Image 1: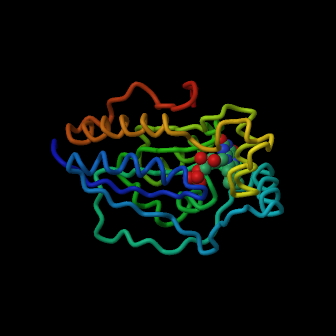
Image 2: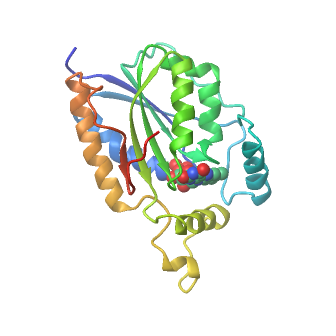
Length: 229
Ligand SMILES: Cc1cc2nc3c(=O)[nH]c(=O)nc-3n(C[C@H](O)[C@H](O)[C@H](O)COP(=O)(O)O)c2cc1C
């Protein structure tokens, strides 16, 4: 049915990139009349910055050993919420969905996907394909359907973004002038990408209103080339 819709946004953000994307996106839906419920996934033991390097490499090794990493989450109350569509905002950690979002995907709350269209919104360095596939499969197993994805990569391309990301995680500050990392554009998705997100949000608002969510030409990749997943 055409008209305003109810949208549930479930997301996680550690360094603030997904918050930036949602701050640009959610108002575009609301100004078109859609009702948006924005919920952050909160781990019982929250991740903090700077990132503990031992923890970083331990989880890296466990992921590469094939483990599915999850952690306890604070309860989320979805009672009485009947969204027309779910928007999942997440980021890859070690080529899989970040541990908080992976926990959501593998936990009881994933029942909210049942019989609903799901749109993935990702921020990342540039290695997102495997994480999106894992999320898609989990949404599928929960009875939902991933119908669209917006992937916003860092403004700095690989391999430099490995250094800018690692510096941000381990130092949690802007590199001082003269530091070799300061030669690159700053860590993160960058202002031009936020403009693209705003446009994408306006288009999504129209598709929601006109019941054309399924109309798309492929995943939208910002700051990078389209790759097959
Ligand atoms: C532990 C950890 C592992 C990461 N692994 C990946 C990865 O596999 N692929 C990638 O593209 N980015 C990876 N990143 C970078 C983040 O996904 C990226 O910076 C994202 O935009 C952060 O989103 P947020 O600021 O909302 O938390 C990793 C970040 C962390 C903290």
